[in-house]
Length: 194
Image (cartoon, rainbow, N blue to C red; front, top):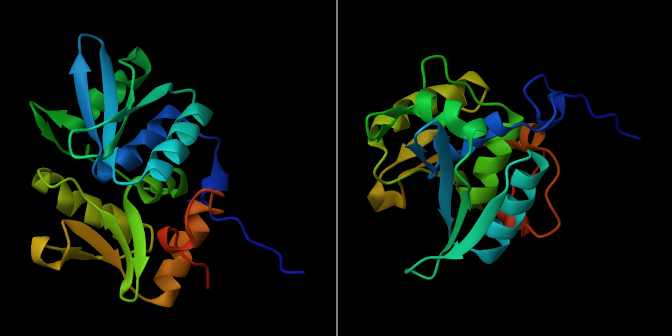
């Protein structure tokens, strides 16, 4: 029997919390403020992503809805909530999305990012970014590296904007951080453990 060692940054290190939605904001998610509230939304390319993300948000006490977008994608969005107001205050500089100083990633945040925008291929595991969020890309890359996941920033010609994590050890590290694959998630959309 193999004993699994828990990571201090892994998904099991702390209970799910609304602050985990920073993982969506590190990727293609957006946050909008209204008064003393905020709403987080993300467009996903597959219905299974929307369903799994919806369930993950419910575990964090954050009600969300699934909506169809014009481009035949699925939008996942929370209601405006005072619980999410700190995310809006921390991540927005006017209308520009930018991680707050000292932003860090952990397993719970990475899990949401992987569900919303992750996929594997023969070159590694890719985490999609928001195409209009260029100011956020570098600090997000620093946060990835700080948890042992240095990644290459892919431009639009290479299928980006996205970060690609390459190498069995690094992808194994990502798998360790994000925990077990939800049943609805196809194997190629989840990082494989070593």
